[in-house]
Image (cartoon, rainbow, N blue to C red; front, side, top):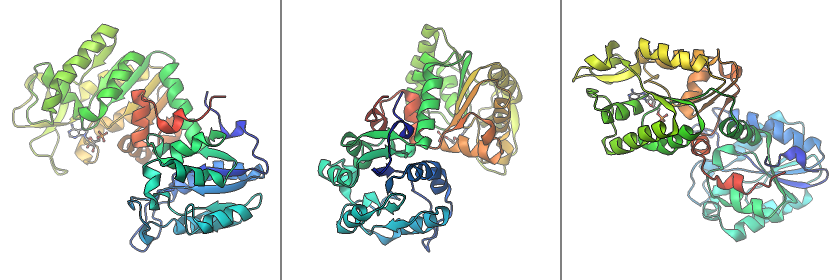
Length: 393
Ligand code: AMP
């Protein structure tokens, strides 16, 4: 188990907290969605309650290593003030004189938000001297920025090696829930993988084959597998360069004694358009001039039966073009069947998360992962630089 912030004595300590305040801003610099600020509050409030002096750092957008007012974290500081009863200061630099001075004068229960880390190119190049300057402001380092743990950046990786470290609540939940489902699942363990490209998810599928009992493959991805098996899939999206990999994955599943289940019928259309009507076809009568844009009723039946009898379910990637109302049925039905799972149900990936959020069922699931890239890496079983550096208890 990785160390959590609750495992450290923070009283009177200067705590450097890495968060993900990469919030969307409109043209006037107004925050249009402050979910990321709001979600970091439990960790922030806990640290302050311990009587620590809190220095918060984050990136925002892609300023490419240079100061750019458009990407200033100042609007975030203003928003933070609205949520906290504590005094909040803002530093106009990251490791410059203003940050150093304000960090030095910070009192217990006060907050200092540093300017955007990515105003320094040294952040993304993981420079030691930049990490040393960040670390010099604090006694303890806490990372609560799950969305960036797969990045080997100075504020995520190098600085963690220079101070006693731990994970915040947000990140701890992501890591502990997902890794314990992967490594110590209640069985049957069913993984559902959908989405657009096979190439993005090859390593996820390979890793899940070794962990799960049953893998349900849908979305556009399924057509590469079906074509590799010799089926005619019309004009559906196929990753022709990955046909061999798809074959290799199916052989791996067989070798591991795992069930890899592919769709058997589809909602199809001639044109990829929100106004296209769904026409249903099975694999046996797939027309040459149509593409599959969603799974069909028989597949929904097969998939939901597997899901509902599982004790652990991990779902990544929509099973159809859920952005089009005529092709969102499969994704909706899969989402609803998750509610019947008596056990752990985890959803990851930006699109899948927004699908369960828009259905209003997110709070009935064990966990909805926030970090797209980071959660895929975790499902791949890859070493994540920001996690690897956090000490074990
Ligand atoms: P990903 O980011 O890989 O999870 O892919 C998500 C995207 O996959 C969504 O925008 C879906 O519209 C798309 N998708 C799912 N099923 C299909 C399909 N059958 N054909 C084309 N795109 C699909």
